[in-house]
Image 1 (cartoon, rainbow, N blue to C red):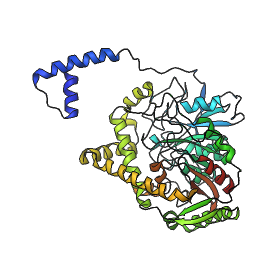
Image 2 (cartoon, one colour):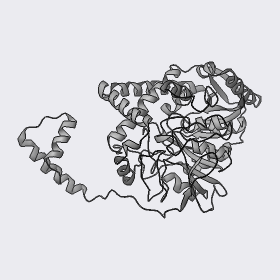
Image 3 (cartoon, helix red, strand yellow):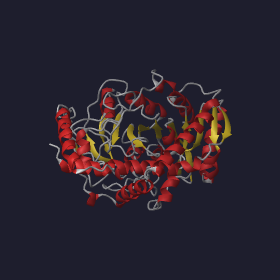
Image 4 (cartoon, rainbow, N blue to C red):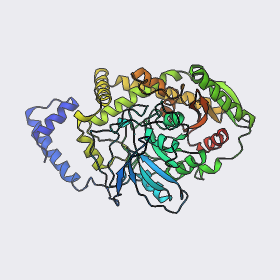
Length: 473
């Protein structure tokens, strides 16, 4: 039943002035609308719940261990894990936060597809709280450690997925990438990380950070394995109307191993110029190997490249604040939010949330209010212009190349300010804005810590990344 209090609250939120005679009429109309809507139950089809145990590995990569069953299919023989923001029926999903209490009764679309492909699901992995930072230090369940560099952070927010792959605990693990959260841990931990073309992997059962930026993608022990997983999880899903087909329809991973001679790669000048000398040297050596295989490289410039990380920060944090302000509800095309998760998001324990989460929500909701949305729209307009510049650059290139991160993995406690976080996403976040597929492959080490080479291709051109990445690997 809708009463006059609901009408008054709605009018105040919309900025509409009502006189006393209108309130009752609107309440009656809304009550009729409620009767019409009552025919539609906001429920989600259930799945068989999994048995689980607490994660106990030495890197704190796993939040929970699951005793999955091996299956037949293209992923047969692969052990996999998924980040703690993807639903696994019967297993608590916390998004790395102590303020969330939620046990899904359904699987995320990507979990269904992993198991349908024959992979063995062995657990869920730790992550930075609500995927807001990039080091693996802010999870309410404890920091994740880096198997490839004992004193260094593993990168985030998909820290547990990167560490689990690097430690050999799984063959592949899913992460999410809003500003670089698949590719950063891949680079810091010395593994492969793929951010696919935006929305080619469905997000039903995934807890968004920023719906217009979020990507789901694999971290893996090899380029071929990463693309095998991508082939299994990509493609539209009826429960996520924002998902779209992946092209071409043929298996992408089959391109790994195809010849690369004749390909042309543009090396992004802005990214190379700001990289630490040892990182620049390692990436240069990897590019030299590609040249030896017949790849032509040339320097290219991307206008305003260095400003795009700030645009991602504004967009992502404004969208995250809106999600919390709307009690977990995504309107419009949505991203496959299931009602039980929406209800859990509406009941967050704010007193248990980390300081960074609260700061982000309040700061950027205040920014949105103060600018009446202009700051958000301005960042989205900058996004559109930069996307056009990347499209232009790729017009006569097969791919772009640059260091995945300008530095190797920082020490624990070294990334403390917003500016420090922006530095970590400088090279990755621009391609979350554009939606282009981007791949991080290991490119040796610098001062004993892994370095990543990032390759970026045109929309839906994952096969080019597979063949160039396999050659670089």
